[in-house]
Length: 324
Image (cartoon, rainbow, N blue to C red; front, side):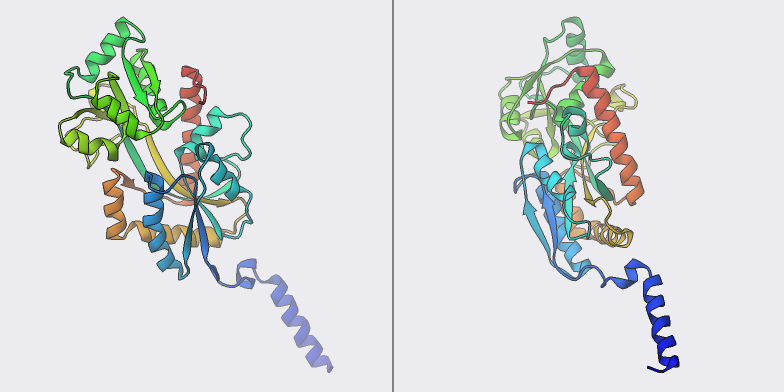
């Protein structure tokens, strides 16, 4: 080898070594991406995840394969993503429970939602709604007043101890200085049906199962838990409008990847999710869920998760909530 060839070869090797890792890698993605949804098919998180996945695949130019991995209020699916290689090919489409609330409830979790993921984006927030049987006429204020006079005399249903619905009611209890009697249910179906039947004085429900029954006159919507009125229930006041300034408790969906995933991969996933949220069919699906599209930056989502864990810590501590 000539001295000139030797110098050229050395210069090439040095340039390659000095090149950033993102330049040495093939452009992401080069194979299908797995989107883990830690809930069964058919629920709100699954519906939203599938709607965005289709548009994300178009943006990435690769298939996005859905894997439903339910169990332990979302923790099984979330833990599997946290322990996956940080390469952007295993992505979590998570929700409030496994990404925030569970950290306040369980002391022996196998992952920490604040430190074991790289946040990508908050996808959407989902308001909850306080409902009451149509056969009764008490307003939320009257129910609160009754609970103040006689603690535990006013019952409410949620989908389980430690659920977002439970925490939403306990936040109201704390702010209103009224103690309600909690009745946990195994799912939204039994919850809303017992509310229709008058077996509880009120209930906290996600919006989709409540809306048809409210429109049919079988339930009354008392208040939504978001800071602004819901498009799905435009005539229903917020808690702030009823005098509880600062009250806000939404469930939500967001995307995250394992800790250590390169920033350029996180950015590409985030850009893809934001593009998906701009699609009319995705926005229609979210609207049907009573959701408000978000599309935050990664750092905004990181702060959001920290704030949500802190909020859950306060509510769980004040109410003495124990998981089922």
